[in-house]
Structures are given as structure tokens and as C-alpha cells.
Image 1 (cartoon, rainbow, N blue to C red):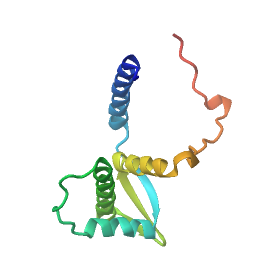
Image 2: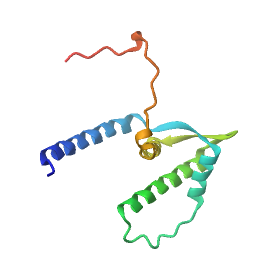
Image 3: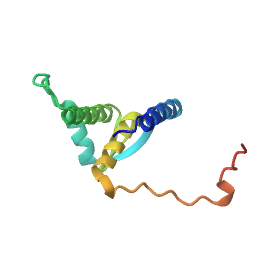
Length: 134
């Protein structure tokens, strides 16, 4: 049986996550990324493709999410085509943090248990923030 109290707590924590997101949104607008040419070109191709709107009734949740991901790829392709700087075999582009986040979350989901967060370089003791009292 589902523990309703636990899910009530999860709903409250989801609101906390949204509040954190609000502050992240206010502080981080764009992130500069470098993408390999083939990946960047595939995103531009997705933007330039003309998909018909027919036949989408009755989508499963999985199909809806898959189409949403494809839409994110196309929007990244739009940004690349309008603002990307091609440098040899890479493109440098400033992506809205929501597009970058969507791509990162999809990567994490696809990697599954093989995902490992990127390690941070060790901070020197003088760079560590002082603990706040409380």
C-alpha cells in the first residue's frame, strides 16, 4: 500500500525544487557549450525538418515525452543556426539553461546506472566558504 504521508512530503519537496528552480532561473540565463559538428548539424537538421501535425491523437506518455525531446533538439538546432559559431569540427553556442538542462537530463536518463556526475576539482582550503552559523 502506498504511504500517502510520504507522497505528501514528496509533493512539498517538489515545491521546494520548483523554488530552487526559480532562483536558478533568475541567476543563470545561458550557458556556453561546444558541440561536435555532427551533433550540431543533426540538431539543425531537426529544426529544418517539416513534420506534419497529423496522427498525434492518442499518444502514449512515452510517445509524448519522445516528441518533446525531439522538439528540444529542434529548438537547439534553431539556436545553432541563428547564433552558433562554427569552429573547425565544433560549434560554439550559448544555449538557454532550460535547453542545456533538458539535454543533460536526457543524457543522464539514457546513461542509467552508468551515469557518474562530473567530478569537481578539489578546492583549496582558502577557497572554501565559511560555514554559516545557525
